[in-house]
Length: 196
Image (tube, rainbow, N blue to C red; front, top):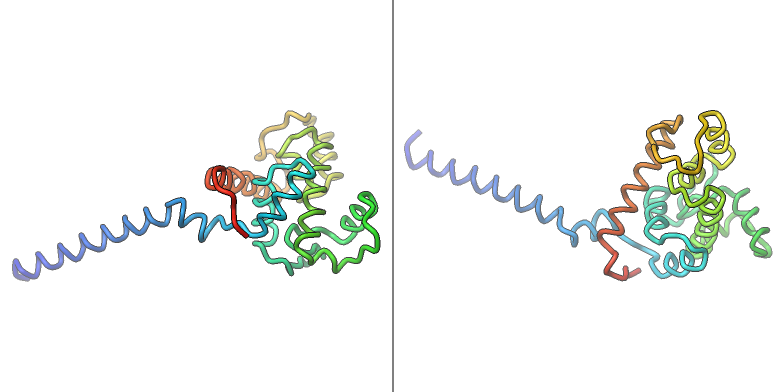
């Protein structure tokens, strides 16, 4: 290979390396992260109902991202429905508790109602678990009774702060992911009002 060809290959490699580094930096930019990774749909509803029920909107949007990926028609195998993946029996209980008449399961597929019920439920769990986000999210995922059992069995109090001690692998992963996403949403949107 001659000097000219070697120089061309060197320039090509340098170009590819520089392009990769630049592309990675663009991907990590706040703009790209907001546009492609940490999107925020239904911002008006999230802000309205998180304020009404006194829950952190960054926590709510992180829950929605992990529960349904912002798909309002999402349905899980166990039967959870909508953006915040609310079980029909939980929806019926919330409807009764909040004096919402004529509740039907399919109403959970309506984004605004699902967010309203989900925010109410998160607020209820936060109150029940004394503001502990780890226990609140574990209860949202695994059920409040399950988390109370863990607290009793493992002698946890409301100051519990190590999600790695959660006995269910799926719940442990869920709690850590939601908390990570909540922090990223706050970093990316704390000075920006998201647009639906």
